[in-house]
Amino acid sequence: MALISRQEIIMIAIKRNFDYHLINFQDINAAEFNYIKEILTEDLYNNVIDNPDDYLIDSVDTSGIVKSYISGDLSVNGTAITSITIADPAVFTLNSHGFENEQEVRIEKKDGKNDSAWSDLLADQVFVISDKAANTFQLKTSLQTKYIKPCLAYFVVYDIFNQLFVELSERGVYNLTANNAQVVSNQTRTEARNDYYRQAQSLARILKKYVEDQVEDEVAVYQDYYDSTKLSVVSSHLVDYAGESKRSNHI
Image (cartoon, rainbow, N blue to C red; front, side, top):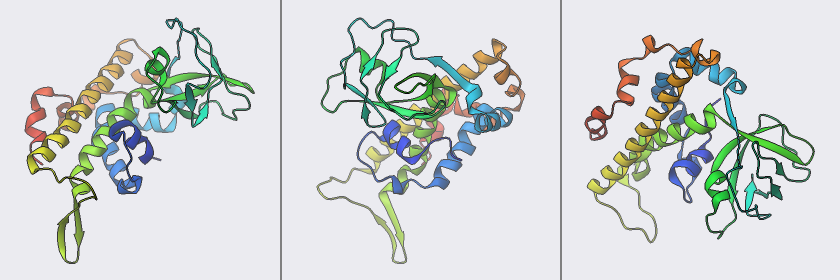
C-alpha cells in the first residue's frame, strides 16, 4: 500500500484543480523506493509501513490560541467542525462523526474564509484520529503525515513533471496544451520542475534530521530500525544541498 494517495499529492504539492488520473500508482511506488526508502533505510521504511501506529508524534495543542474557534470555520473530511477547545490536547466536537482511532483525516478551512490562528495551525494538513468518543475526538500528527507525505508528494511531482507536457502515440510525441492556457518556454518549465526538486530536497533534509534526532534521543522504534551505516550514496545525495543543482539541471 502506498504511503500517500494521488489526491493527497495534489492537495500537498499541486494545490489546484488537477486530474488525479495523471498520477500513476507506479509513479508513487517508484518515488517511495527511490527517495523515502533511501532516506529512512530499509528496516525503518518497512516498519513504518507495517506498524504506522508506532510513529504517532504529538497531539494537537491549541493552548496558544487566544480567540475562540467559530463553529464551521474548519472542516474535517468535508464536514464542518462544531467546536474546538483551547487546550493541550485540543478536543474537537463533531456529532456522530463516525471516525475511528488511527484513521487519517484532513482539515480544511471554509471556502472564502480568511486565514486565522486556527487555520494557520490546522488547515490543509492531514492528522490521525485519537481518543475518539461518539461526538468528540483528538488529533495527532505522525511521522507519515508530518514528514513523509509532504516530502514524497513533491518528489512524485518532480518525477512526473515532464510527462504532464507530452503525449506519446503511434504518430509520435506531441506537446499537450489546454484551452485558454499559454504554452511556457522550455526554460520556464525547467525552472518550475527544479522548484519542485528544491522543495522536495528541503523536506527530505527535514525528514532525515527528525529521524536522526529520534535515534539520538534513543526512541526505540527509530533506534531499533534506522541504520545510518546503510545510507547509500543516493540517499546521502538527496539531502546534500551542494549537489542539488547538478542533479536538478539534468532533466
